[in-house]
Image (cartoon, rainbow, N blue to C red):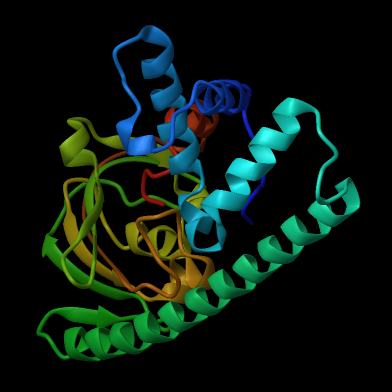
Length: 254
């Protein structure tokens, strides 16, 4: 939900903007940036403008300027605190509803595309579809130990959306990831137990075994089918789990 608040630095804009107005500036485009104060004011203005991007269609710049001027001058405000709170809450709720509707639509589209991709991938030679819906394809057979759900593993991996967009990669970070196998998405927990140390596999993970309707941050939307290439380097056993969990980032294998 959008939060309506001004930071301390944005509050400084109130002062500098009103100072500029009092000095007779009639057009913001004509404002000189040849002093430290002017440059500071401009920089703060950019910060405030950027902070309002999410609600820019709801911002009336003339009314915004009026609010700044009246607050700075200590004049009687056109809207009292209750009215200001009411309108801010109303807009925030509307934006939240619009966002939820957008998420739902995006989720429906992603689910449909994902199902089509899964159907096509399942028909490929060498792809095993498990009872859960996980699609597992062995690329290189390992010869070492296989982990259990309680073990900690070290892997190299690359994660992509079905359109080929890469959202995470231990290869890009230049080092493998280590984590307790029970602490990652269900598709990973299941798939890694089918592998042996030294093995490599390609996984196609449906949404219910990944991040589902919520998605994950800005990189993975709702109901996304995920594609991973995974190399199982080492099985460390469950006694290494606590230490590994503290060293593993949020994005590592989900």
